[in-house]
Length: 302
Image 1 (cartoon, rainbow, N blue to C red):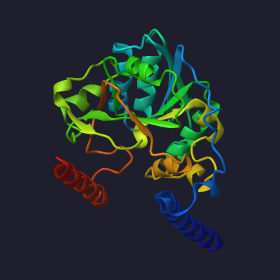
Image 2: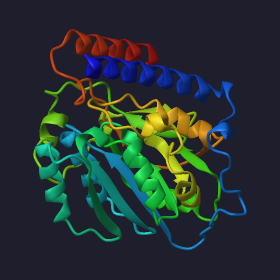
Image 3: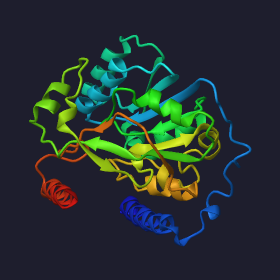
């Protein structure tokens, strides 16, 4: 009984803290209360020569999407910058392990693969891996993204041109190209289930405009990342969980950095949208409700 009571108290304490930081990240509370300072413009390293970018992604039950992301780096390797590809994963996700093993064997110019295993409880809180990567990065810039994003023709070289000599805290692309919501039986997702180098048919995507640095589109100055981490001062966002947590910390990250990001032109960004979420149990009423809500949102946005 004592253990149960403790569990209930912890559960509701976390709920309250989660609501508090969602409220705080709306701008109602000063960010300096939780992150006193960020590196000034003068303190941020500026590289006008060859840049290094670290791409940070997470994968849990999304190997069929990760295939396209890693394939895009094989098919369209950068020539104007060096790229470290960091993927956080759990050994309990066999499909993702197989996918990473396959791509580890692919030698690609200017690409360094960097697989980072985490216990699934830490993987489920995405900001834990992002914070680890941010604090330890040696890169000039860090692109926090999701494994459904594809870096197509000239994407990374175009980014390199846009970032040279820049020192802003946070950037984001002004546009991305997305699919409709695909079911798990769609040929695109079925093909991605087998470890292989694939490419996308760009005619299946339509263009949308971006207005801020959302979760998969946060490109952060390396000096800022090393200093500030990723919500490192907010305990609830560094706490392991037994289920995949909705990424409310993305908004908190922008709040802590005092920036919604600066939009820049980056070509070749594609995202594969999917109706079936790996983090949810299949067939449950809650999952079907979430899927219907996503369909309605997509319909209203078109």
